[in-house]
Image (cartoon, rainbow over all chains, first blue to last red; front, side, top):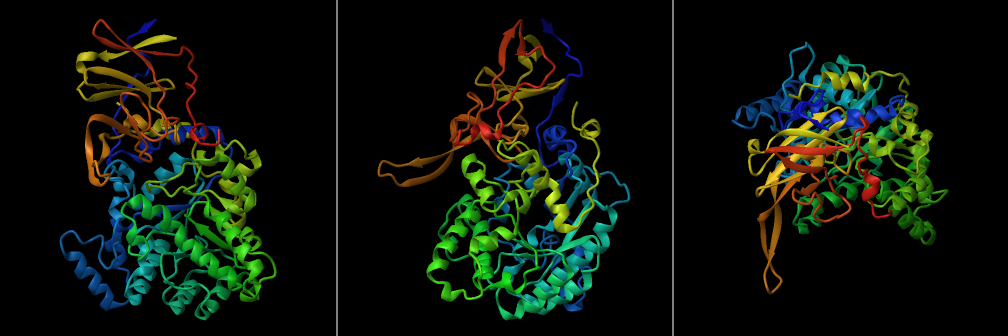
Length: 417
Length: 140
Protein backbone atom coordinates (compact mmCIF):
# COMPACT_ATOMS: atom_id res chain seq x y z
CA UNK A 1 0.00 0.00 0.00
CA UNK A 2 1.38 3.41 -0.90
CA UNK A 3 0.92 5.97 1.84
CA UNK A 4 1.33 9.40 0.38
CA UNK A 5 0.71 11.23 3.64
CA UNK A 6 1.54 9.03 6.60
CA UNK A 7 0.11 10.16 9.93
CA UNK A 8 2.17 12.79 11.75
CA UNK A 9 4.73 12.86 8.95
CA UNK A 10 7.47 15.27 9.99
CA UNK A 11 10.83 16.31 8.63
CA UNK A 12 13.90 16.23 10.88
CA UNK A 13 16.65 18.77 10.52
CA UNK A 14 20.43 18.54 10.71
CA UNK A 15 21.69 18.81 14.28
CA UNK A 16 23.84 21.89 14.76
CA UNK A 17 25.12 24.08 17.60
CA UNK A 18 21.72 25.79 17.61
CA UNK A 19 19.66 22.62 18.00
CA UNK A 20 17.65 22.32 21.21
CA UNK A 21 19.16 19.89 23.74
CA UNK A 22 15.84 18.02 23.85
CA UNK A 23 16.09 17.40 20.10
CA UNK A 24 19.73 16.36 20.21
CA UNK A 25 18.90 13.85 22.94
CA UNK A 26 15.45 12.75 21.73
CA UNK A 27 16.67 9.22 21.07
CA UNK A 28 18.00 9.02 24.62
CA UNK A 29 14.57 10.11 25.84
CA UNK A 30 13.01 7.21 23.94
CA UNK A 31 15.61 4.86 25.40
CA UNK A 32 14.62 6.11 28.87
CA UNK A 33 11.18 4.59 28.41
CA UNK A 34 12.79 1.15 28.83
CA UNK A 35 14.06 2.00 32.33
CA UNK A 36 11.21 4.25 33.29
CA UNK A 37 10.97 3.03 36.89
CA UNK A 38 14.70 3.33 37.66
CA UNK A 39 16.08 6.03 39.95
CA UNK A 40 18.75 7.84 37.94
CA UNK A 41 21.69 9.93 39.09
CA UNK A 42 24.33 11.44 36.81
CA UNK A 43 27.50 11.98 38.83
CA UNK A 44 29.38 14.00 36.24
CA UNK A 45 27.89 16.51 33.84
CA UNK A 46 29.57 19.75 32.94
CA UNK A 47 29.01 23.41 33.36
CA UNK A 48 30.27 25.26 30.36
CA UNK A 49 31.03 27.97 32.80
CA UNK A 50 33.06 29.99 30.34
CA UNK A 51 29.73 31.09 28.86
CA UNK A 52 29.12 32.82 32.16
CA UNK A 53 32.74 33.59 32.97
CA UNK A 54 32.24 37.31 33.63
CA UNK A 55 29.83 36.35 36.44
CA UNK A 56 32.56 34.24 38.04
CA UNK A 57 35.26 36.87 37.55
CA UNK A 58 33.03 39.34 39.38
CA UNK A 59 32.92 37.00 42.38
CA UNK A 60 36.71 36.89 42.90
CA UNK A 61 37.39 38.11 46.43
CA UNK A 62 40.89 39.46 45.87
CA UNK A 63 40.49 42.88 44.30
CA UNK A 64 43.79 42.81 42.42
CA UNK A 65 43.12 39.42 40.82
CA UNK A 66 39.52 40.43 40.10
CA UNK A 67 40.84 43.54 38.36
CA UNK A 68 43.32 41.44 36.36
CA UNK A 69 40.53 39.13 35.26
CA UNK A 70 38.09 41.84 34.34
CA UNK A 71 40.66 43.86 32.43
CA UNK A 72 41.79 40.79 30.48
CA UNK A 73 38.15 40.07 29.74
CA UNK A 74 37.72 43.47 28.12
CA UNK A 75 40.10 42.48 25.35
CA UNK A 76 37.99 41.45 22.32
CA UNK A 77 37.45 37.69 22.27
CA UNK A 78 38.83 37.18 25.78
CA UNK A 79 35.73 37.55 27.97
CA UNK A 80 35.30 33.82 28.42
CA UNK A 81 38.93 32.77 28.84
CA UNK A 82 40.33 35.46 31.11
CA UNK A 83 42.84 34.13 33.68
CA UNK A 84 42.43 30.55 32.43
CA UNK A 85 45.32 28.42 31.22
CA UNK A 86 43.99 27.04 27.93
CA UNK A 87 45.43 23.70 26.91
CA UNK A 88 46.49 22.66 23.41
CA UNK A 89 43.75 20.52 21.94
CA UNK A 90 40.89 21.97 23.95
CA UNK A 91 39.27 23.14 20.71
CA UNK A 92 39.83 19.79 18.96
CA UNK A 93 37.27 18.01 21.11
CA UNK A 94 34.31 18.52 18.80
CA UNK A 95 36.19 16.75 15.98
CA UNK A 96 36.17 19.91 13.94
CA UNK A 97 32.43 20.44 13.79
CA UNK A 98 31.41 16.80 13.63
CA UNK A 99 30.02 16.82 17.21
CA UNK A 100 28.09 20.08 17.55
CA UNK A 101 27.05 19.80 21.23
CA UNK A 102 30.73 19.81 22.19
CA UNK A 103 31.27 22.94 20.09
CA UNK A 104 28.64 24.99 21.88
CA UNK A 105 25.05 24.86 23.09
CA UNK A 106 23.69 27.94 21.33
CA UNK A 107 20.03 26.95 21.41
CA UNK A 108 17.31 29.42 22.16
CA UNK A 109 16.42 29.64 25.84
CA UNK A 110 13.34 31.57 26.81
CA UNK A 111 13.62 33.90 29.80
CA UNK A 112 11.98 32.03 32.66
CA UNK A 113 13.62 33.74 35.61
CA UNK A 114 16.18 30.95 35.98
CA UNK A 115 19.81 31.20 34.99
CA UNK A 116 20.56 30.22 31.39
CA UNK A 117 22.76 27.41 32.63
CA UNK A 118 20.03 26.04 34.88
CA UNK A 119 17.64 25.89 31.93
CA UNK A 120 20.18 24.01 29.81
CA UNK A 121 20.86 21.60 32.66
CA UNK A 122 17.13 20.97 33.14
CA UNK A 123 16.78 20.16 29.45
CA UNK A 124 19.61 17.63 29.62
CA UNK A 125 18.26 16.08 32.82
CA UNK A 126 14.78 15.74 31.36
CA UNK A 127 16.00 14.42 28.02
CA UNK A 128 18.40 11.88 29.52
CA UNK A 129 15.84 10.89 32.15
CA UNK A 130 17.79 11.93 35.25
CA UNK A 131 16.50 12.54 38.76
CA UNK A 132 19.73 14.26 39.88
CA UNK A 133 22.73 15.66 38.08
CA UNK A 134 26.08 16.63 39.59
CA UNK A 135 27.66 19.52 37.69
CA UNK A 136 31.37 19.99 37.25
CA UNK A 137 33.50 22.79 35.76
CA UNK A 138 34.94 22.22 32.27
CA UNK A 139 37.89 24.55 31.48
CA UNK A 140 38.83 24.59 35.15
CA UNK A 141 39.67 20.89 34.74
CA UNK A 142 43.24 21.86 33.88
CA UNK A 143 43.59 24.73 36.34
CA UNK A 144 45.93 22.52 38.34
CA UNK A 145 48.54 23.21 35.66
CA UNK A 146 48.18 26.98 36.04
CA UNK A 147 51.60 28.46 36.85
CA UNK A 148 50.06 30.91 39.33
CA UNK A 149 48.73 29.15 42.42
CA UNK A 150 47.01 32.30 43.70
CA UNK A 151 44.92 32.45 40.54
CA UNK A 152 43.81 28.84 41.00
CA UNK A 153 42.79 29.72 44.55
CA UNK A 154 40.91 32.85 43.46
CA UNK A 155 39.09 31.20 40.57
CA UNK A 156 38.28 28.10 42.58
CA UNK A 157 36.74 30.13 45.38
CA UNK A 158 34.80 32.33 42.94
CA UNK A 159 33.47 29.30 41.07
CA UNK A 160 32.37 27.65 44.31
CA UNK A 161 30.56 30.81 45.36
CA UNK A 162 28.88 31.13 41.96
CA UNK A 163 27.81 27.47 42.02
CA UNK A 164 26.49 27.54 45.59
CA UNK A 165 24.83 30.96 45.57
CA UNK A 166 23.71 31.38 41.97
CA UNK A 167 23.09 27.97 40.39
CA UNK A 168 22.32 25.21 42.89
CA UNK A 169 19.50 27.03 44.74
CA UNK A 170 17.53 27.15 41.49
CA UNK A 171 16.87 23.44 41.18
CA UNK A 172 16.90 20.71 43.80
CA UNK A 173 17.87 18.19 41.10
CA UNK A 174 21.24 19.91 40.61
CA UNK A 175 24.04 19.06 43.01
CA UNK A 176 27.67 20.09 43.19
CA UNK A 177 31.10 19.14 44.45
CA UNK A 178 33.23 22.11 45.40
CA UNK A 179 36.44 22.82 43.52
CA UNK A 180 39.52 22.32 45.72
CA UNK A 181 42.54 24.46 44.65
CA UNK A 182 44.80 21.52 45.37
CA UNK A 183 48.08 23.29 44.63
CA UNK A 184 47.45 25.27 47.84
CA UNK A 185 46.43 22.83 50.61
CA UNK A 186 45.50 25.46 53.18
CA UNK A 187 43.11 27.09 50.69
CA UNK A 188 41.43 23.70 50.19
CA UNK A 189 40.84 23.52 53.92
CA UNK A 190 39.18 26.93 53.83
CA UNK A 191 36.84 25.87 51.01
CA UNK A 192 35.82 22.72 52.90
CA UNK A 193 35.14 24.82 56.01
CA UNK A 194 32.97 27.20 54.00
CA UNK A 195 30.80 24.63 52.24
CA UNK A 196 30.84 21.31 54.10
CA UNK A 197 27.51 22.12 55.76
CA UNK A 198 25.72 23.09 52.51
CA UNK A 199 23.18 20.43 51.52
CA UNK A 200 23.51 21.01 47.78
CA UNK A 201 27.27 20.40 48.02
CA UNK A 202 27.52 16.64 48.19
CA UNK A 203 31.29 16.23 47.95
CA UNK A 204 34.70 17.68 47.18
CA UNK A 205 36.62 17.48 43.95
CA UNK A 206 40.18 17.77 42.78
CA UNK A 207 40.94 18.09 39.10
CA UNK A 208 43.59 15.40 38.70
CA UNK A 209 45.54 17.07 35.90
CA UNK A 210 48.37 18.41 37.99
CA UNK A 211 51.79 17.40 39.25
CA UNK A 212 51.09 17.32 42.97
CA UNK A 213 51.67 14.12 44.91
CA UNK A 214 48.52 13.23 46.83
CA UNK A 215 50.49 11.65 49.68
CA UNK A 216 52.37 14.83 50.64
CA UNK A 217 52.06 15.56 54.35
CA UNK A 218 50.60 18.99 53.60
CA UNK A 219 47.30 17.33 52.60
CA UNK A 220 46.68 15.30 55.75
CA UNK A 221 44.68 18.03 57.48
CA UNK A 222 42.46 18.34 54.40
CA UNK A 223 41.82 14.59 54.18
CA UNK A 224 41.02 14.40 57.88
CA UNK A 225 38.56 17.25 57.57
CA UNK A 226 36.81 15.72 54.55
CA UNK A 227 36.67 12.34 56.26
CA UNK A 228 35.07 13.96 59.29
CA UNK A 229 32.27 15.48 57.19
CA UNK A 230 31.40 12.11 55.62
CA UNK A 231 31.11 13.59 52.15
CA UNK A 232 33.10 11.89 49.36
CA UNK A 233 36.34 13.12 47.85
CA UNK A 234 36.56 12.81 44.08
CA UNK A 235 39.44 13.04 41.65
CA UNK A 236 38.29 14.12 38.21
CA UNK A 237 40.74 13.33 35.45
CA UNK A 238 41.51 15.42 32.41
CA UNK A 239 44.06 15.83 29.66
CA UNK A 240 47.34 17.68 29.32
CA UNK A 241 49.07 17.65 25.95
CA UNK A 242 51.96 19.64 27.44
CA UNK A 243 53.15 16.67 29.48
CA UNK A 244 56.64 15.88 28.12
CA UNK A 245 55.76 12.26 27.32
CA UNK A 246 52.56 13.24 25.55
CA UNK A 247 54.35 15.75 23.34
CA UNK A 248 55.35 12.74 21.27
CA UNK A 249 51.70 12.09 20.40
CA UNK A 250 50.71 13.79 17.16
CA UNK A 251 46.93 13.29 17.20
CA UNK A 252 44.32 14.41 19.70
CA UNK A 253 42.86 10.88 19.90
CA UNK A 254 46.24 9.50 21.01
CA UNK A 255 46.82 12.10 23.68
CA UNK A 256 43.22 12.03 24.95
CA UNK A 257 43.07 8.23 25.18
CA UNK A 258 46.20 8.11 27.35
CA UNK A 259 46.09 11.36 29.28
CA UNK A 260 42.71 10.84 30.93
CA UNK A 261 44.00 7.59 32.40
CA UNK A 262 47.52 8.81 33.15
CA UNK A 263 46.65 11.07 36.07
CA UNK A 264 44.37 8.53 37.72
CA UNK A 265 47.12 5.91 37.50
CA UNK A 266 49.58 8.21 39.23
CA UNK A 267 47.29 9.50 41.97
CA UNK A 268 45.84 6.06 42.70
CA UNK A 269 49.32 4.54 42.93
CA UNK A 270 50.50 7.20 45.36
CA UNK A 271 47.31 6.95 47.38
CA UNK A 272 47.66 3.22 47.91
CA UNK A 273 51.41 2.68 48.18
CA UNK A 274 51.63 5.41 50.83
CA UNK A 275 48.90 3.74 52.83
CA UNK A 276 46.34 6.54 52.72
CA UNK A 277 43.42 4.06 52.83
CA UNK A 278 44.77 2.90 56.19
CA UNK A 279 45.29 6.46 57.42
CA UNK A 280 41.81 7.63 56.34
CA UNK A 281 39.71 4.49 56.38
CA UNK A 282 36.39 6.31 56.37
CA UNK A 283 37.19 8.77 53.57
CA UNK A 284 35.14 7.77 50.52
CA UNK A 285 37.15 8.11 47.30
CA UNK A 286 35.55 8.49 43.89
CA UNK A 287 37.51 8.32 40.62
CA UNK A 288 35.88 10.23 37.77
CA UNK A 289 36.24 10.06 34.00
CA UNK A 290 39.04 7.64 33.33
CA UNK A 291 36.75 4.91 32.07
CA UNK A 292 37.07 1.46 33.63
CA UNK A 293 39.77 -0.47 31.76
CA UNK A 294 42.59 1.11 33.77
CA UNK A 295 41.26 -0.35 37.01
CA UNK A 296 42.08 -4.06 36.47
CA UNK A 297 45.31 -3.06 34.74
CA UNK A 298 46.54 -1.16 37.80
CA UNK A 299 45.16 -3.75 40.22
CA UNK A 300 47.27 -6.42 38.58
CA UNK A 301 50.41 -4.28 38.27
CA UNK A 302 50.35 -3.14 41.88
CA UNK A 303 49.46 -6.56 43.32
CA UNK A 304 52.24 -8.16 41.32
CA UNK A 305 54.95 -5.77 42.48
CA UNK A 306 53.64 -5.24 46.03
CA UNK A 307 54.02 -8.90 46.88
CA UNK A 308 57.71 -8.74 45.99
CA UNK A 309 58.38 -5.30 47.51
CA UNK A 310 56.04 -5.02 50.50
CA UNK A 311 58.96 -3.36 52.34
CA UNK A 312 58.23 -0.21 50.31
CA UNK A 313 54.58 -0.07 51.34
CA UNK A 314 54.65 -0.95 55.03
CA UNK A 315 51.26 0.56 55.86
CA UNK A 316 49.38 -1.90 53.67
CA UNK A 317 47.48 -4.72 55.36
CA UNK A 318 46.00 -6.20 52.21
CA UNK A 319 46.61 -6.23 48.47
CA UNK A 320 46.44 -2.97 46.50
CA UNK A 321 43.60 -4.39 44.42
CA UNK A 322 41.58 -4.93 47.59
CA UNK A 323 41.95 -1.27 48.53
CA UNK A 324 40.96 -0.30 45.00
CA UNK A 325 37.88 -2.49 45.24
CA UNK A 326 36.79 -0.51 48.31
CA UNK A 327 36.73 2.73 46.29
CA UNK A 328 34.09 4.14 43.96
CA UNK A 329 34.25 4.86 40.24
CA UNK A 330 32.15 6.61 37.63
CA UNK A 331 31.30 4.79 34.43
CA UNK A 332 32.03 7.25 31.63
CA UNK A 333 33.74 6.93 29.18
CA UNK A 334 33.02 3.23 29.48
CA UNK A 335 35.06 1.02 27.15
CA UNK A 336 32.56 -1.36 25.52
CA UNK A 337 34.29 -2.72 22.47
CA UNK A 338 34.85 -6.12 24.12
CA UNK A 339 32.02 -7.16 26.40
CA UNK A 340 33.90 -10.09 27.91
CA UNK A 341 36.65 -7.76 29.06
CA UNK A 342 34.12 -5.25 30.33
CA UNK A 343 32.34 -7.93 32.32
CA UNK A 344 35.63 -9.09 33.86
CA UNK A 345 36.54 -5.48 34.61
CA UNK A 346 33.27 -4.89 36.41
CA UNK A 347 33.72 -8.06 38.42
CA UNK A 348 37.25 -6.99 39.43
CA UNK A 349 36.02 -4.03 41.43
CA UNK A 350 32.49 -5.24 42.17
CA UNK A 351 30.74 -2.70 39.99
CA UNK A 352 27.37 -3.68 41.38
CA UNK A 353 28.18 -1.76 44.58
CA UNK A 354 31.10 0.50 43.57
CA UNK A 355 30.18 1.94 40.16
CA UNK A 356 28.08 5.04 39.48
CA UNK A 357 26.70 6.20 36.16
CA UNK A 358 28.07 9.45 34.73
CA UNK A 359 27.04 11.09 31.47
CA UNK A 360 29.75 13.72 30.95
CA UNK A 361 27.14 15.63 28.94
CA UNK A 362 27.65 17.79 26.86
CA UNK A 363 31.09 16.48 26.03
CA UNK A 364 31.91 14.62 22.84
CA UNK A 365 32.30 11.20 24.50
CA UNK A 366 29.21 11.35 26.72
CA UNK A 367 27.37 8.18 27.72
CA UNK A 368 23.59 7.92 27.83
CA UNK A 369 22.00 5.83 30.62
CA UNK A 370 21.40 3.14 27.97
CA UNK A 371 25.16 2.47 28.08
CA UNK A 372 24.40 0.70 31.38
CA UNK A 373 20.79 -0.39 30.93
CA UNK A 374 21.54 -2.39 27.76
CA UNK A 375 24.52 -4.36 29.12
CA UNK A 376 23.53 -8.02 28.65
CA UNK A 377 25.52 -9.44 31.58
CA UNK A 378 24.24 -7.16 34.36
CA UNK A 379 21.29 -8.12 36.55
CA UNK A 380 18.38 -5.74 36.86
CA UNK A 381 19.46 -4.93 40.42
CA UNK A 382 23.04 -4.22 39.29
CA UNK A 383 21.72 -1.81 36.65
CA UNK A 384 19.55 -0.05 39.22
CA UNK A 385 22.50 0.26 41.58
CA UNK A 386 24.87 1.64 38.96
CA UNK A 387 22.35 4.03 37.46
CA UNK A 388 21.31 5.59 40.74
CA UNK A 389 21.13 3.58 43.95
CA UNK A 390 24.89 3.44 44.55
CA UNK A 391 25.06 7.23 44.21
CA UNK A 392 22.11 7.63 46.57
CA UNK A 393 23.91 5.53 49.19
CA UNK A 394 27.30 7.20 48.84
CA UNK A 395 26.03 10.78 48.50
CA UNK A 396 23.05 10.44 50.83
CA UNK A 397 20.48 11.41 48.18
CA UNK A 398 16.77 10.89 48.64
CA UNK A 399 15.58 8.06 46.37
CA UNK A 400 12.61 9.82 44.88
CA UNK A 401 11.50 10.27 41.32
CA UNK A 402 12.05 13.86 40.28
CA UNK A 403 12.05 13.71 36.48
CA UNK A 404 9.16 14.07 34.04
CA UNK A 405 7.85 11.21 31.93
CA UNK A 406 9.75 10.63 28.68
CA UNK A 407 6.54 10.99 26.71
CA UNK A 408 6.03 14.48 28.15
CA UNK A 409 9.60 15.46 27.31
CA UNK A 410 9.22 14.22 23.74
CA UNK A 411 5.95 16.08 23.36
CA UNK A 412 7.66 19.32 24.39
CA UNK A 413 10.62 18.99 22.03
CA UNK A 414 10.54 21.81 19.54
CA UNK A 415 12.64 20.64 16.60
CA UNK A 416 10.31 18.88 14.20
CA UNK A 417 8.62 20.50 11.24
CA UNK B 1 5.54 -4.29 4.59
CA UNK B 2 4.19 -1.04 3.23
CA UNK B 3 5.46 1.67 0.99
CA UNK B 4 5.76 5.28 2.05
CA UNK B 5 6.23 8.16 -0.34
CA UNK B 6 8.74 10.64 1.07
CA UNK B 7 8.57 13.18 -1.75
CA UNK B 8 9.62 14.04 -5.28
CA UNK B 9 13.08 12.87 -6.31
CA UNK B 10 13.60 16.17 -8.06
CA UNK B 11 13.36 17.99 -4.71
CA UNK B 12 16.64 16.46 -3.49
CA UNK B 13 19.92 18.35 -3.77
CA UNK B 14 22.95 16.29 -4.81
CA UNK B 15 24.56 15.66 -2.42
CA UNK B 16 21.54 16.11 -0.19
CA UNK B 17 19.12 14.35 2.11
CA UNK B 18 15.68 14.32 3.62
CA UNK B 19 14.98 12.80 7.04
CA UNK B 20 11.40 11.88 7.80
CA UNK B 21 9.79 10.75 11.02
CA UNK B 22 6.45 9.02 11.35
CA UNK B 23 5.06 6.83 14.11
CA UNK B 24 8.12 5.01 15.48
CA UNK B 25 10.21 5.37 12.33
CA UNK B 26 12.92 7.85 11.46
CA UNK B 27 14.35 7.30 8.00
CA UNK B 28 16.95 9.30 6.09
CA UNK B 29 17.05 9.35 2.31
CA UNK B 30 20.34 10.55 0.81
CA UNK B 31 21.05 11.54 -2.79
CA UNK B 32 24.67 11.22 -3.89
CA UNK B 33 26.05 11.08 -7.43
CA UNK B 34 22.55 10.73 -8.84
CA UNK B 35 21.80 7.68 -6.67
CA UNK B 36 19.50 7.39 -3.65
CA UNK B 37 20.23 5.57 -0.38
CA UNK B 38 17.98 5.14 2.65
CA UNK B 39 18.82 4.23 6.25
CA UNK B 40 17.22 4.18 9.67
CA UNK B 41 18.21 7.28 11.63
CA UNK B 42 19.79 5.19 14.36
CA UNK B 43 23.47 4.85 15.20
CA UNK B 44 24.62 1.28 15.99
CA UNK B 45 26.93 2.72 18.63
CA UNK B 46 24.53 4.17 21.17
CA UNK B 47 21.33 4.82 19.26
CA UNK B 48 22.02 8.44 18.34
CA UNK B 49 20.41 10.24 15.39
CA UNK B 50 23.24 9.26 13.04
CA UNK B 51 21.69 10.60 9.84
CA UNK B 52 21.05 14.07 11.28
CA UNK B 53 24.76 14.80 11.51
CA UNK B 54 27.19 16.60 9.29
CA UNK B 55 27.85 15.28 5.78
CA UNK B 56 31.57 15.51 5.17
CA UNK B 57 34.14 13.88 2.90
CA UNK B 58 36.08 10.92 4.30
CA UNK B 59 39.50 11.91 5.61
CA UNK B 60 42.34 10.02 3.92
CA UNK B 61 46.09 9.99 4.39
CA UNK B 62 48.53 10.03 1.49
CA UNK B 63 51.34 7.53 1.79
CA UNK B 64 54.12 7.84 -0.77
CA UNK B 65 55.93 4.96 -2.48
CA UNK B 66 58.66 5.17 0.14
CA UNK B 67 55.90 4.74 2.80
CA UNK B 68 56.33 8.22 4.21
CA UNK B 69 53.23 10.14 5.11
CA UNK B 70 52.38 13.11 2.93
CA UNK B 71 49.59 14.27 5.20
CA UNK B 72 45.81 14.09 5.33
CA UNK B 73 43.27 15.24 2.77
CA UNK B 74 39.58 14.99 2.03
CA UNK B 75 38.45 12.18 -0.27
CA UNK B 76 37.25 13.23 -3.69
CA UNK B 77 34.89 10.27 -3.96
CA UNK B 78 33.66 9.17 -0.53
CA UNK B 79 31.15 11.16 1.47
CA UNK B 80 30.34 10.33 5.06
CA UNK B 81 27.49 11.15 7.39
CA UNK B 82 28.66 11.68 10.99
CA UNK B 83 26.54 10.77 14.00
CA UNK B 84 26.31 14.03 15.94
CA UNK B 85 26.28 12.27 19.31
CA UNK B 86 29.82 10.84 19.21
CA UNK B 87 31.28 11.18 15.73
CA UNK B 88 30.78 7.66 14.34
CA UNK B 89 31.13 8.08 10.56
CA UNK B 90 29.36 6.06 7.89
CA UNK B 91 29.90 5.90 4.12
CA UNK B 92 26.70 7.25 2.61
CA UNK B 93 26.82 4.72 -0.25
CA UNK B 94 27.25 1.64 1.98
CA UNK B 95 26.16 2.75 5.46
CA UNK B 96 29.32 1.15 6.88
CA UNK B 97 31.85 2.58 9.37
CA UNK B 98 35.32 2.96 7.77
CA UNK B 99 37.11 0.77 10.33
CA UNK B 100 34.48 -1.55 11.81
CA UNK B 101 32.34 -3.37 9.23
CA UNK B 102 30.06 -4.57 12.03
CA UNK B 103 29.08 -0.96 12.72
CA UNK B 104 26.63 -0.11 9.97
CA UNK B 105 23.44 1.81 9.49
CA UNK B 106 20.35 -0.28 8.82
CA UNK B 107 19.40 -0.05 5.16
CA UNK B 108 15.85 0.70 4.15
CA UNK B 109 14.51 -0.49 0.79
CA UNK B 110 14.03 2.39 -1.61
CA UNK B 111 12.67 2.82 -5.13
CA UNK B 112 11.85 5.69 -7.46
CA UNK B 113 8.24 5.42 -8.65
CA UNK B 114 6.65 7.99 -10.93
CA UNK B 115 9.33 10.49 -9.98
CA UNK B 116 8.78 10.00 -6.24
CA UNK B 117 11.09 8.46 -3.64
CA UNK B 118 9.32 5.51 -2.05
CA UNK B 119 10.66 3.62 0.95
CA UNK B 120 9.46 0.27 2.27
CA UNK B 121 9.02 -0.17 6.02
CA UNK B 122 7.33 -2.79 8.22
CA UNK B 123 3.58 -2.66 8.71
CA UNK B 124 3.85 -2.96 12.44
CA UNK B 125 3.86 0.23 14.42
CA UNK B 126 6.59 -1.33 16.55
CA UNK B 127 10.15 0.07 16.37
CA UNK B 128 12.28 -1.59 13.70
CA UNK B 129 14.93 -3.85 15.30
CA UNK B 130 18.19 -1.97 15.30
CA UNK B 131 21.77 -2.79 16.15
CA UNK B 132 22.86 -2.12 19.69
CA UNK B 133 26.35 -1.37 20.89
CA UNK B 134 26.70 -5.00 21.98
CA UNK B 135 26.27 -6.08 18.35
CA UNK B 136 29.35 -4.18 17.23
CA UNK B 137 31.68 -5.29 20.03
CA UNK B 138 34.43 -7.77 19.20
CA UNK B 139 33.44 -10.36 21.80
CA UNK B 140 30.38 -11.58 19.92
